[in-house]
Image 1 (tube, rainbow, N blue to C red):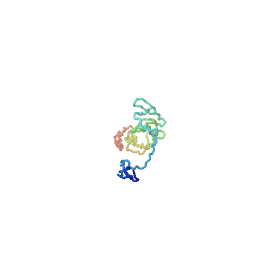
Image 2 (cartoon, rainbow, N blue to C red; image 1 turned 135 degrees about the vertical axis):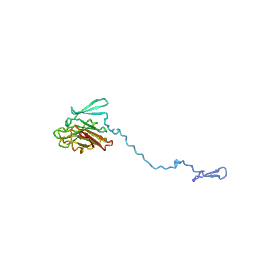
Image 3 (cartoon, helix red, strand yellow; image 1 turned 90 degrees about the vertical axis):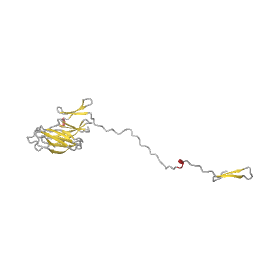
Image 4 (tube, one colour; image 1 turned 30 degrees about the vertical axis):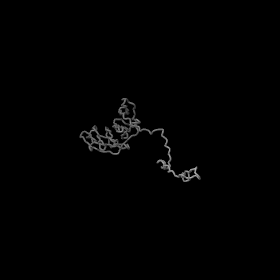
Length: 231
């Protein structure tokens, strides 16, 4: 017989009055460790839907392309160096430029193209910005050089700094250095490097060269004759 408190009693039914012969209470059953844990309530958030398209991959400049300025036809040839074939020719006659000078940015995104002479009517010089992905002229830099200017006035060379920040153009006859900021494509400084240039004693056929420091902080400009100078 099991009582309310769980005690089990054993009786002898053959004896008169059902004699109690034993009584005991069983030990409580042991619980497994996991059954004693109490987990807090939780909810699952649905995952965001997977995008059907990946973000666009940035377009890298075509480093296998080369540009050739054509002075006679006043255009630019685009050469595929993988096949050594001309794949496009871009006319720039509308800008009144006889292309002779070219400077390519180190990252290969843009090239700057200029002629060596000024516009006869406006007295201005124009530099073209050529996009190597679009393979076309996307903007221009137009400025008025220092005056007065002789009829044989010329400009060269056109160079860009190793960090692609500064574009340099020299006017040997006047001994003037023009510095352009490629982040804004504007003329930011004009430096007179020669006090005797342009006086008649200095030839307009001077040789000019640039050398940049690897970090792009300094540029060394040399030209001559009659006397070579380095700045």
